[in-house]
Length: 204
Ligand code: TMP
Image (cartoon, rainbow, N blue to C red):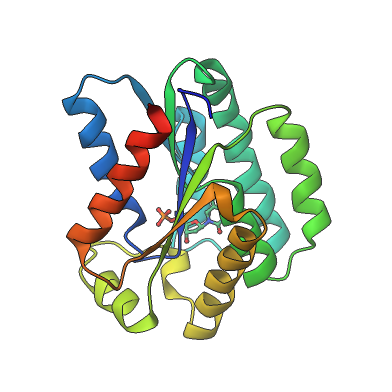
């Protein structure tokens, strides 16, 4: 494993993904360990413009347009990601698995199309490790209620989120050594320790 791994945080809304990436960022900052953090959609200046467009509550793009916008956002981020690849630890809040889980498993977009464009955008950029955060529907709704602003994707129904979360799980099962499942229904401190212990091993 590279000492400058690419670490991705995945999961549906309210799964604790962003909380966990914050915990890791704080841990690295405290120890003066350099890292580069980015989110998707968004991150770079151009990607943030695309994020606003996709997630705006009044947007009603069809699923293929949505896919192309997510990939456009990724394509813009790749300039930064390639710059820091193998030079700094990279933390990414959502990446390829989100596209497959949401657009393919959730919305039925053709998998081959997603894979083909991703392959071309990423070229030899590889993910080292993924934390997959899971949450049940009750806890997801509880967490979404505390948010000030909900986006277009926060209003999907239970069935949609089941499909997306099961999609994430299927992806993790294809390469279990590169995934850590984090059950966010469990104790928050236990999960924080689990993640930090794994991070320590990944960057050692
Ligand atoms: P977030 O800020 O909670 O991560 O919200 C971003 C939304 O974008 C979330 O609903 C998941 C969705 N999304 C996709 O549908 N496909 C993708 O490829 C990515 C990166 C995000």
